[in-house]
Amino acid sequence: MLKDITIGQYFPGESIIHRLDPRFKIVITLIYIVMLFTGGTPLCLCIGALYTFIAIALSGVPLKMFWRSVRPLLPFLVITAVINLMLVRSGDVLWSWKAIKITEDGLNISAFMIVRISLLVMGTSILTYTTSPVTLTDAIERLLSPLKKLHFPVHELAMMMTIALRFIPTLIEETDKIISAQKARGAEIDTGSFMTRAKSLVSILVPLFVSAFRRADELATAMECRCYHGGEGRTRLRQLKSAPRDYIALLYTIGFLAAVIWFK
Amino acid sequence: MKNIIEIEKLHFSYPAEEGKEAAEVLKGISLSIREGEFVAVLGHNGSGKSTLAKHINAILLPTEGRVTVDGIDTADEDRLFDLRQRAGMVFQNPDNQIVSSVVEEDVAFALENLGVPYEEMRRRVDDALKAVGMYEYRLHSPSQLSGGQKQRIAIAGIIAMQPKCIILDEPTAMLDPQGRREVLATVQRMNREQGITVVLITHYMDEAAQCDRVVVIDKGSVLMDGTPREVFSQVERIKAIGLDVPQATELAHELRKAGIELPEDILTAEECADAIEALFTKKGSN
Image (tube, rainbow over all chains, first blue to last red; front, side, top):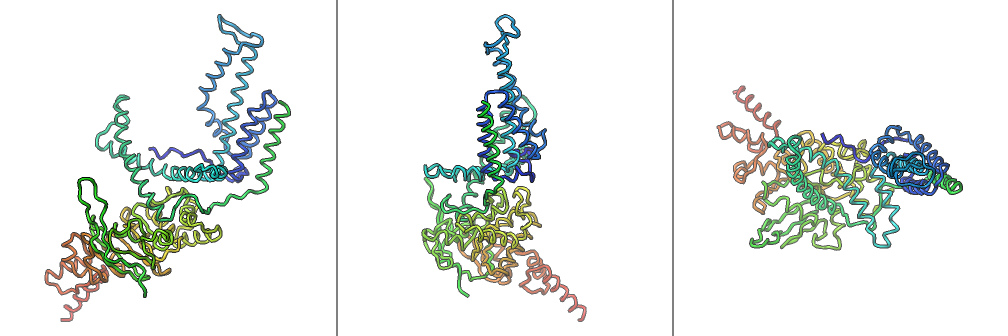
């Protein structure tokens, strides 16, 4: 039942975007966000849209996946658009009824904002669609490694993320087993009123937590047995090597950013 | 051959809880294990066999007595990583000892911690994965593997450290028969081909019967120590402490009690069948 939940949204593939160095991908995504929010004219947004769609085409990830990433945001988009429509008072009045005035500026701003946020979500999804969570964790650890000098626990955070990712499927499986076990004892989990169901949740969460703590304890011992002693002096099996294509992608993105700034 | 593990008069008690007296779990165990030996440690729940195992790579330290592995005292904190590299440990639940979501990265975990350079790490990880027969799964996620396969990955993670001995704490207890066979065969191969000393803690008598030596622990002390034949031929004594003997041994024992002349030291089904067959041919010729 719960096994169908997919972890992260990684879409495996061999495209040029998949093969980019994940560190560069994160930096490029940050530049991309800056690019979308610097430009205030429709032309700037068009440049941003062009960049987004070229990247989507290169990634080989089906377009419907991107629609899936925007869809949950639709209510939010509609509400902000409506608020913008109502509250922007400048510009020519197109339509009015009692206190409500819809102006040309309001319409422009609303449309602008919907497109900008949709692009933002789609563009950043490319990162998570083309990079596996493990790789992403690794890249974040390396990008943040300068912060180690400020005693920021970079390695510890990355290790926590790695272990969390590793244990998600295990704990999902465990939850499934506990649900079956409680059902076999007559617990009402899918039926009954909201309150009964909420109460039966306790009977799932308690054993799940107990088991998670036990697992954590055993894992800690096993890690100690394998000489784990924090990030100091650690080497890595996964080598991140930047290739010329990473620099080309970076320059290409900076080029788009420059264009947006030029037409601002 | 020289001894790799030396346990001298080992006593261990867990720290006393409030209002309770400290329970002594190990009561003066002395044991030497030679290099390259394959030793099974038997004992029922609460006999102290897992506690004993945890002393070999310094997860627990003796309350009294001394444990040395390859000349390193387990109480010597400065050489802790040295020690743990020499004596690797595999636990019961494969799920709770795998750290990474990628098989090969998990096998590399210990090497990463030890700061092994990349080229050497790559070679040792590949060798370890090939040794346990899981090389083609190196890029899989452990959650896609069976219990037996996961346990082999855990063994590979230890083998990659190139240890002198491996301690396995009931590695097959949570596996199906197929997984048990896989894991045991892997461990036996490590022992035979790479000369790694194996301490196998188990409650499967059939597994113990395949070892070089069997040590029976009861109530925190060594009750019996010898070859499987020597130990399992004392059927009544083993039963008295709540353990079983291999099925074939038990059958032969029951038949002998019923007055049939069978040898006392039968361990495997084949031996048992042969002995019974020999009995029939003897009768036939009379």
